[in-house]
Image (cartoon, rainbow, N blue to C red; front, side, top):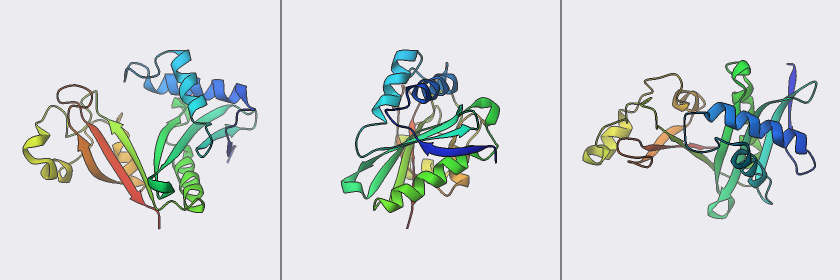
Length: 185
């Protein structure tokens, strides 16, 4: 393995800049969020707040290859995974999985029992696109599938997450936010 996972801290502004650049690259043109350096850097700095977890995978030259963060909810029993991003050139190499597994262990150590995340479908990449999920919410969840490999849903399902909810039209008509969760213990 030519990389390691470390804490992202306030004392590492260069790593913060690199994490922000990864965020912009990964979501460029895919969402309204983090399309400029200022908003991406603000997201990174927000992840450094007290009580949160912010970790990066770095190579031997301390180049950021991936970044994951989480924040506690419900008295620390539930944690939101936000965000997860891996450099395009390093995707499908185990970095994303390692970051999530590392995060899961840290959440367990802090008393967490559930890890959850939201993953928008703004670009027609799942079976929930352009349908009336209100007509059969449970059936829509049960029939969930990823229809385009660009959507991270299949990745999270492989890691043991399950679809636990939908926010219909969160990003406009027919563009839901999909909620995934995983029991950690």
